[in-house]
Amino acid sequence: MGSHGPSGRLAGKNAIITGAAGGIGLETTILFAREGARVLMSDISQPALDRGLAKVLEIVPWCIKPATILCDVTKESEVAAMVDLVDTWGGVDVFFNNAGIMHAHDADAIETSEKVWDLTMAINVKGVWYGSKHAVLSMRRHGKKNGSVINTASVVALVGSATPQLAYTASKGAVLALTRELAIVHAREGFRFNALCPAPLNTPLLQDWLGGDEAKRHRREVHFPTGRFGEAIEQAQAVLFLASDESSFVNGTDFVVDGGMTRCYITPEGPPTEPPKNFTR
Image 1 (tube, rainbow, N blue to C red):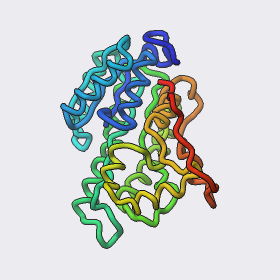
Image 2 (cartoon, one colour; image 1 turned 135 degrees about the vertical axis):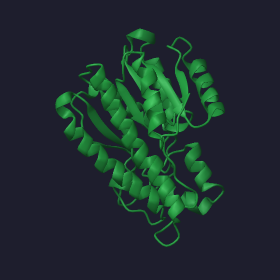
Image 3 (cartoon, rainbow, N blue to C red; image 1 turned 30 degrees about the vertical axis):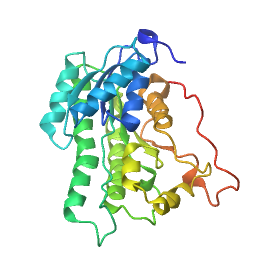
Image 4 (cartoon, helix red, strand yellow; image 1 turned 60 degrees about the horizontal axis):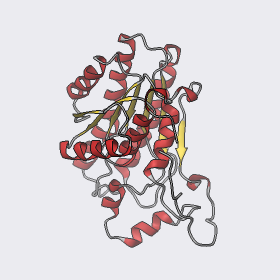
């Protein structure tokens, strides 16, 4: 187990997490809170945020209670207001640009509508730009020297997919390029930018997209050497490392957490492995 409260790995740090009500965002909130960070959870649904906050407090009741805020990351004024709140705490130390969508009607170049394309780009790319911009402004205002921004990309930004989700794939490729450039531009200020590249995960977002289509599910599961999707907590552990001072010389990376999927030619034989029974939060 990690340290409780103010003695943790993120003690004294102020963190913003977008898309914090579920999946990777919620698991990251739990880890950040456990490790002593003061966290602002943002999402677009207040009921979902309320449920997420209740789970955080159930698991780490000793933590600094996270604050919650509604934020549409496609609107710069709302992102700025979110950062303004954290400025009252002493400024942003960690910003996890995690909010994103994979639209159910995202398909190939022929079938993807302009509406789906524009919405996906607005949330997945413009939202990351706004978050990064206002994180840097806050860090500068408060004289930060070691800020960390983590942007959620995807392994589909690195490898092609035969089951097309073109807008999503293109948006995540943009996140990688954006992250790399920000990492170089702001390196001398001490601000690190890294892109988390998850494989398909056992999250509500993916499960909603797959629905009951077992063939679609199998098309993805079969490519994992483990024979299983990853879990959100396994991504959150990587985000915790990137947020902490332990990763002080990690900058501009495509931080791939995929169970070996993108390095696999032929999957091993035998039954799938099981996720660890007791993840360390």
